[in-house]
Length: 443
Image (cartoon, rainbow, N blue to C red; front, top):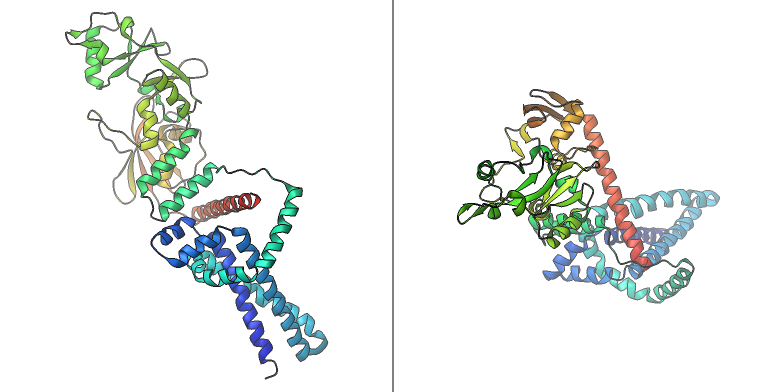
């Protein structure tokens, strides 16, 4: 019975050690967006969590002070207990036993639980934490002054800028919290990534262009407008690498029929750009010049393709269809495992759709297929990539038009690779959050 008080004291210290460790993890891992949503719905605990997390330095200082005090307490009580029972070897036994017990029950286990349920645990621990912050206020003040003094020797330029990765993480948190829906989240992500997109990523390649020669008979031009349903057509002199202007339908057709003016007198000068120009800058140039089409040149000055105002806007709001467009899905599901893919589809979208991670210079599925086959694709060409079997089902003399994608069961090796990539991404996300927290502390 003489040791009951000591044992009760040790158990209490370990419980508090678990509380401090779990609370620290909960507050560093919680989603402020979810907590804010709960607070706006009237949850008092959520409001308290928001209030406490506004001064993270004071919160962290309180938790560290408390954790160190109870760990010292359990170590001291453990030494007294084991020395009383075991004599001289008691101190050594106490060190080993207490270290293991604190590590398992005071650190690893509570932190693991709090990481899985950060918002719930933060709200559970908030009332006691508020009391402890008040109790440790003098020590917190002392440590705050000491920190400011030390920071004078390690002065860091404050920055309030958020990186693109942080902004994307914030959008994801807001979306998960239910404050915005999926379409709004996609729009925000597109807007954030908009400034990084280059002209080469969204252009219509020269082989797919509808254009006309300067000396083409007007009757054929009229037929081309009727066939394509386009309101603007590129005009070239001799060959497609020498584009001299853009012909607008309203300038070609007048109230009296086809214009009598020579084509060269009614075309507008083209806007030229290079493949690596950011579309955000290109959009400004198109607006300034009141133009809807830009001709993308390759490194030799030849025509690589075109980018339209519509192409750029679609990067923000998604596919735009008008009454003349044939609505086509890039990926059409045939059955549970087979999909028909338009080979002109953006390759990054293809990778997202089939959840594969590929490093490639190609911007379209056709380009990637050509890369894998190391030749111009023809009908019935087949190859395997990870858990996918790709078969070209339609092709012309220059490219694959459509392909069938068979999704096979994922092998154990691919599953391990996927898990490894997911763990890596999660670690990078944690590192970003940690860097952000350190940046906030520096301010």
